[in-house]
Image (cartoon, rainbow, N blue to C red):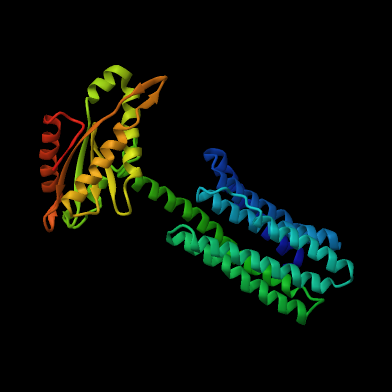
Length: 362
C-alpha cells in the first residue's frame, strides 16, 4: 500500500490543523497574544499545504507560498509577543511580499523553475532568521530547541532547491519538504508548549521571591541573592523605614499607604545600579544592598535616596502626600553573615529615628 501525493498533503494539513486548534483553544482560555499568533500560523499553513493539491495556477501557487511565508512571520511575531515586545514589525512583511511579487513576476515570463527556486530561497532565509530570533532572545532549553528546529528547516529548503534544479518535473522537492515537516513540525509544536511551561515555572519562581505590592524583592528573595550561607563581602546594607507610616494609613487610608510604599521603591530603584537590590523586609521597612564597602559612600548614597523621597510630595487622589524615610547603614566587615549585618543596620536605623527621623545614621 502506498500513499499518493494528495494524501500526504492532506495528512500534513490535518496535523497542522490539529496543532493550530489546540493553541487556539488555549488562547481562548488565556487570551495571550502569542498563542493566537502561533495558532493562526499553524491554521494558515494547514490551509496552504492542502491548497497545493488544488491548484497549479502560477498566481494560486504564489498565494500559497506567500501563506507559508506569512506562517513563518507569524511564528516570529508570536515569539516577539511572548517577549513582551510589539509583535508586528515592518520587516516581518518583507519576506511574504517579496515571495508573492517574485514568484508572480518570474512565472509570468515563463521561468517557473526559477520562480520556485527564488521563493524557496526566501522561505529558507525567513525561517532561518526566525530560528535565530528564538536562539538569541530569551532563555531556557525549550526556547533554544525551538530555535534549532526552525533552523533545521533551512537546509531542507536548500536541498529542495537542488532537487528542483536536478529534477524540475519531479515532485521530489515537495515530498522532501512534506516528509521533513512531519518530523520537524511535531518537534516545533512540542517545543512551543515546553516554552510556555518553562515560562510558567519562571513566573512561579519570580512570585516566590517578589513582594506583590511593590515589585521589590521580598525577604526570601533578598536572602536568595547570597546562597552561600548568606555571606556579605564588600557590601553595604541599608535598612529604610518610612516615617510615621501609621499616620499615613490613618490619614490617606490603606490604599494611600500602598501608594507610599510603591513610591519609595520606585524612587529608590532609580538610584540603584547593577547588582544592587531593594527588598521589602516587612511592613514599611526595606532593605537595600549597595555595591560599596566604603561607609562614607554608603552614607552619601543613602542620603540621595532620602532626599529623592522627601524632595517631591506624592499627589494622590487630589491630595499631596509628603513622605520621608529614616535609614540605617551597616557595611559588611569581611565575609559577614547577612543577618549580623542586618542587626547592625537595624541599630543604626533606631538611632536615625531616635534622632528625629528623616535622616541617615551609620
